[in-house]
Each structure stands twice: as structure tokens, then as C-alpha cells.
Image 1 (cartoon, one colour):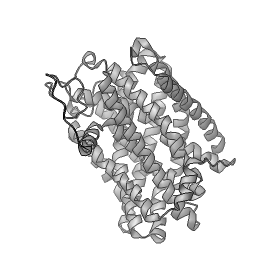
Image 2 (cartoon, rainbow, N blue to C red):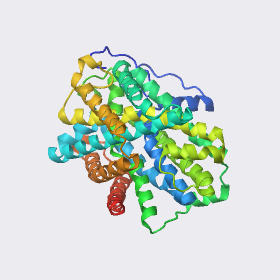
Image 3 (cartoon, helix red, strand yellow):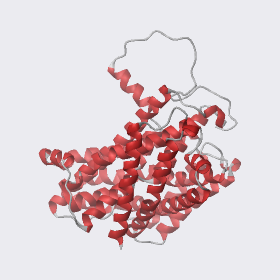
Image 4 (cartoon, rainbow, N blue to C red):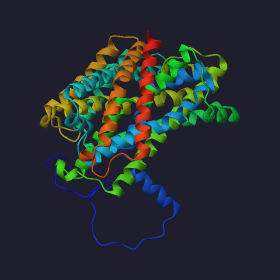
Length: 449
């Protein structure tokens, strides 16, 4: 962190942290291999897990309950798209040593980047409100309705804000990694729901498409949930924060990435995005096997899905689903507010990270507070969460295509990226994602009118 004495990395990704004579290699057993991969996981894993926030869980539950197994293929389709985008964001940050907002502001028109960041901030704030409401609703469900959801909102927001203010970067990072385990609840729920194997396999690899507004709308919503602009900024900022935490305080010290460092980062992103999609797949599958199969096709939120599961799949499934909502909310809400804050900070050239104490970076933490407080106000106003998420999806749908185009152009600029420019496959996937998200945005606007 700024002003800290350089020290060896606490992570085995250990960029530029180790030196010395080469050691004799040892024959490693499979357990050692698994442990070494786990030690590499960080920003990519946390970013991927945060993608499955309570709002996303609601979208996936709605998809499974309304269209059954017919949308399972979207988990396979979106995986390479989000993988390419997040890998590019990580590579840009590791090569330049600065966050995505800084790199974009230096290369592209200020007005264009600024408009995207303002829209991102608003979308994140609305999403924070929707996620706070979802976590509060899940908490109320666990009390059997004895405690109203509204009573959870303010304490939840205050707890998250205090933790962001008071905890060190190392502790915040460990807490985030621990909260990713909450998503396993949805994988376990699949085994409780007993979906038919052959139907599941067929629906996963053979796309089913319906040419109606409802089906197109849910596919567009899934795309907007999986390829979301706030993930771009969080991935890049997290990579920079990790380098700062290892003592690489200045931008010059952080610039340049080795092949080994990039290899480690790619593993992290691959596992994180894969984990995200496995969870997405599991939620859709549970919705199809339990809710859709029993005629429950009106599910619209994560809390409604949890409530509907109890009489159909038993209290264990209900408990898993509810606990998963709370765990993912506690992970996603600070990341949503944090990514909005990092985007604003980087655009305006402000100082500050979550590694700094609030008293030393008041501007940074003021923006963070506004992002979270704005979400709290939205949730306290009792605004319809579905309408709020539609607004968020529209904003993200408008922001994502130009943002993706800027990332693709930035990633192929040799003046910025040196020998770490996009490869051929990365270029194809980035522009494919841009095209898909453009079509999705148009589809979203048409289905929302």
C-alpha cells in the first residue's frame, strides 16, 4: 500500500517479488498442483463470483422457471465472451500498471469516457439498491417473516461501509475470497433438485431459440448480467491493488508484465469466469428442474425463487438458496460500490484505494459512501426491484458496447501495450462480444418499450 515498505508477496502470484538462485525441481504430487493453482486465485476469482450477485441470481432463476432447460446453453455461449473481456482488462492493468479508467482517459476523448463512467456509476448505484433489497428479503425469509426486510437494509449498508472503511486490504481480500464459497450453495442445490441427465446435456449443447419477446428479453438480460461494465473496472483495479500491496507503489514500478505473471493471471481469470458460469448454470438448472417442472413460472426475484423452492424441494434447498443470496450479496455490494468508486477516481486522477485509511483519502471514501448510500436510498424508497433492474440493464446495455470497443482498441495499441497486445483469438472474441452486446442492447430497448 502507498507509503509501505516493500515486502515479499503474500500471494504465490508473486509478481517481481522473488529472486535468487534456481532451485532443483521436485516431483510434485497432484495435491501440490491443486494447491498451487488455488494460491494463484485472486482478482479473477473474486470478479467472477461477484458477477453472480443477487440480481443475477434473480435473472437466472427467472430464466429457468419461465423457459426451463431451454436457456442452459447460454452458460456455454457467454463463457468465452466474458473470459476474453476480463483477460483483456487484466492484461491492460498488468502491462500499464494503472486502472482501466486511467488508460481509457489517456487514449480516448474525455467526454466519451466520462459519459460512460457517469452511466456506470448510476447503474452500479441502482444495482446496489436492488442487491441490498434482495439480501434483506432473504434475511426476512430466514426469520420466517418475523423480521421485515426493511429492518435489515440500513444495518446491512452500515456494516458493509464500516468494513470497507476499517479493514486492511489483506483482510478485505481474504473476506472476499471466503464469500465466494457461498456460491457453492447453488451447485449443491442442483443435486437436491435431481434434474434429468439426458435433457440437461442436450439443452446445454444444443441451443434452443424462441422468436418471441419474452425469450429474447431473458437472453438479453442474461448477456447483460454476465458481461457487465462494472466487472471491467473491478478486474483491472484489483490487479493494480495487488501490485501496490506487494510494494510496487509507483506506476513505473508496476509497468510491464512477464510471461509467467500473465500466465498466472490467465489461470485466475479462467477459474473465476468458469466458476461464475458453473453457478449460473446451476441456478438455471434448479429453476428448470424444480420451478418450471411444477408450473412455477412467475418467479422474478431471487427471494421469490427461494420461497418457491421450500414446498417443492424441501427446507434444505430453501436454506441453501437463501444463504447463497446473502453470501453473494455481501460479496457483490461492496464490489459494485467499489468498482464505481475506482472508475470515478481513475477518471479524475484522484488518489486512494481500499488499502488506504479513510482519513488519508477522504475524497475516495466520500465517493464510495455516495455509491453505497445512494443504493440504500433506492432500496428504502421501496422502488420495484424488477423495474430498477430493467433500468440498470438498459444503462449497462448502452454503456457496454462502446466500452468493449474502447477496450479492444486499447488492447491492440502497441504504444500502450508493447508486446502484450491482443492476440488474434482475443481480438476476434472481443469484437464478437462487442457485436453481441450491441445486438443485445437493441433487443433490450425493443423488449422494454
